[in-house]
Amino acid sequence: MDNRRMADMSRMDRSVIRAMVSGVSEAVAPLSVINTEDGLLGVYDLRGLSDVSLMDLSATEVLELAGRILDALDSLKDILIFPEEIILNEKVIFTDDVTGTVRICVIPGQVGRTEMENVAYLVGRLREITDARGSEYLELFIKEYQEKNYSHFGLLSLIEDMKREAGT
Image 1 (cartoon, rainbow, N blue to C red):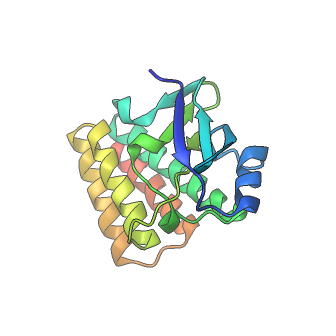
Image 2: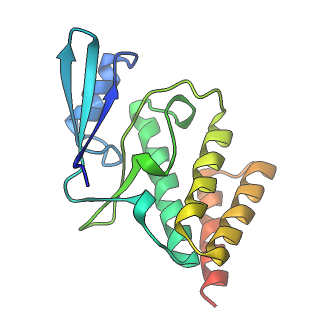
């Protein structure tokens, strides 16, 4: 596997880029930025990280991962990175091989979706890395997420309830 990902960072605010590079947020994959004649190029170092898109998870494992992803996305808001302003799919999500921490390759992009739509899309993409039962739980989670106005902690509670049910 290639241990790097690259992204055009020219459209991002420089103070946000500095926060990303500083490592202040564990949710951001390790990043270096290079000035090029075309703008700023972000280079993510993925050594020691596992690519979520290559995982094969059970129902409880994928629900656990979904919860950790929601936590990571919520923590990105502390450095002014919002889910509706970035590309979100399973190919930009990684987990630390030692700690299990979710790390995200933040790629700016106008995807034309709200935060809810973008997060629901990402969770829907996680159906590709789980079994039929996990896929059913993710579909149920998306439906609940879109129909009700859950707080962050409410979503995590919903996931915990689903994990208990899936584990039986």
